[in-house]
Structure formats: structure tokens, C-alpha cells
Length: 157
Image 1 (cartoon, helix red, strand yellow):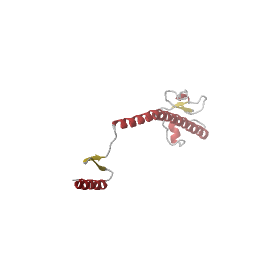
Image 2: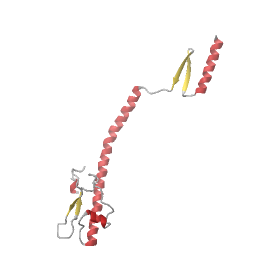
Image 3: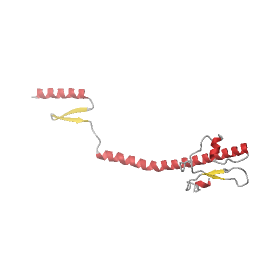
Image 4: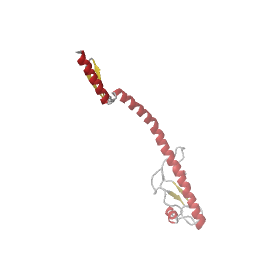
């Protein structure tokens, strides 16, 4: 009887070596117990999901804040570039452009820029010159409603 047990045990240990780490066969009191891959418990999964939710709840507000900051910086830069183009147009032609599209057609800017706040090219607000000079576009402002993070209105930039 002990000879049969030792032979059986030897065969089972040889099988363990052949099967490797994926499937292990354990011999306990001569009962064969198979363990095929081990999964995670529900508690472990809940802890991981809680940690991920905590990290996301910290990161999301910072992400949206950085997007708003980038839009405001882009608007300031776009306004600056368009104002320089208007000034160059005036310097070359002794008049202001009649429309923003004239800046594009005369190659002072490549394309009509998109207002990053309203995400449209149609919301730009132009201001005519205060003195009697030919042209209609002396200054340009954003047509976006609302205030920036510093409290100033977008239309005042």
C-alpha cells in the first residue's frame, strides 16, 4: 500500500513539473486539489476601484481648469496677432480694413482665426476708428459672453 502511495505521489509531482505555474496540483492527504489561476476577490477589486475614483476626482478639476486657462491664453494671443495685422494694414494702405476678411485676402493673416471661447469665426466684434479715417476695422474684440478667471469680461480684452 505504501508502495502504491509513493508511486502515485511521484507521478503527481512529475505532473506538477510538466504543468508549470499556470496549473499546480497539490497533494494533501492523497486527495488531488487542482488550482487553475487565481483571481481577485471582490474586496480587492473594490479597493482598487476606490483608489482610482479618488485619483480621478482629484485630477478632473485640475484638467478643466487647465483647459480654461489655455483657451484664455489662446484668445489673448489671437487678439494680439490680429491687432498687429490691422496696424500693419493701416501702415501699408493709410486706411483700416473694411472687414476682417480683407486681412485674409490681402495676406496679412493666413486665415480667419477661431475664437477659442465661442469656437466660431463668426463671433468677432469689430470697432470702427473714432476719427475720420477710411475703413471699418480699427480694433477687434471677442464676442464671447462671460468673464475670464481674473474677473474681466472677454469682450473687454
